[in-house]
Amino acid sequence: MTEITTVKQRFGIIGTSPLLDRALDVALRVAPTDLTVLVTGESGVGKEFFPQVIHAYSARKHNKYIAVNCAAIPEGTIDSELFGHEKGAFTGAFEARKGYFEEADGGTIFLDEVAELPHSTQARLLRVLQTGEFLRVGSSKVQKTNVRVVAATNVDLPQAIVAGRFREDLYYRLGTVPIVVPALRERPEDIPLLFRKFASDVAVQYRMPAVTLDDGARQLLSEYYWRGNIRQLKNVAEQISAIEQTRVITADMLRKYLPEQQAGAPMAAAGNMRVEDAMSTERELLYKVLFDMRADINELKRMLAELMQGAGVHRAEPLSDIKALLPSAALPAASGTAYAPAPVFAESEDVTDEPSRGLTKADMQREQIVRALRNNHGRRREAARELFMSERTLYRKIKELGIEENG
Image (cartoon, rainbow, N blue to C red; front, side):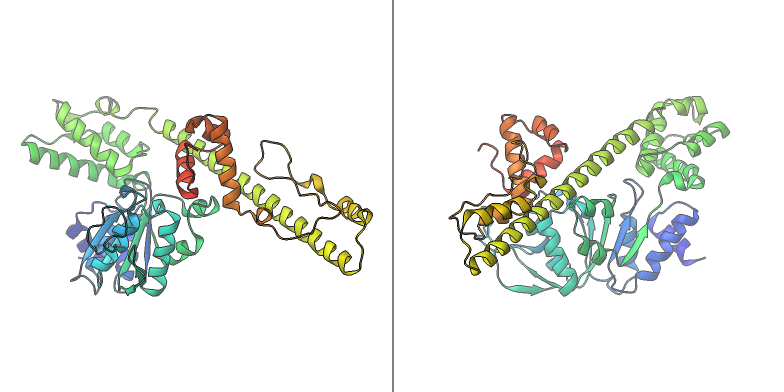
């Protein structure tokens, strides 16, 4: 019996696909080390088994294993949950509390849906991965922890990096060893095996005969797209077991539980999200180019003005000549843009570096969002449409930038 077969039996993993065996082999090889592992794959493929395998076959197996669903913890409390807090650190913090990284010291922590972490928490996590150090919320005392981190996500992290939603340095730190879990449609030979397992479980639980598939139903099952992967297949097996009186399932009977448009509609929705992300990325890159151009222009003005003042030239004509050399039309001046045109200096005006000329990208985004909310009387959906972003993205930006919506 091979080690991979032993792992499958121990953790109840069903399948003979070479892609699945390859992912398990990588997990077994990396388990004895302390390297950080990033498990990727679509939702419902069973990513949660791999950190369990890694922990069970590591030197940390006798210490704690803590699984954290990052998407299920509110943004306002995620830092406290992961790193702990001191008494009085925030309203309701009546006593000090350890976080998961402190509790799991010497063991393994599994960060599921790691792409949902806010940027501030991503920075804290990066510090833990690099130095093993962290701060409790409300504390200035540095603490140490010795934790093995395994993370998982169904998000395309390189795309999230381009869109500014995930830190690039954290991505490389987490993905020291990547494990890709195949989608169910990539392992069609395992689909009948999994269906039989799920149908058998239902039969045992409710004391009924297990359903079986005829050849036509088995072929239909193997050829279906399965966008929901193993989770969807289990749902179908349970539905059929509970509803159908006949215990031998035909293709026609099975087809009632597999809507024809199920594979197409979600793909179209996903395509729309990709278009939106691409538009958002293009817009942000354009803003950055314009912002950098504006900064370069102001810096050039300042340098030329200093040179002329050093030469004793204070007349208006040379300043007018300078203004003529600068591309004042390079930046948008329309009232709807988040960028103001380059300032024009009067004859007697001193050229200084004012704070308003050093606006950050966040300042520009804040101004743009505030204007859109004001134009739409605080209605997020209309404001998001004006900004060419989803309502969820707008809500996240409002929280990140600290925008008061009733202002």
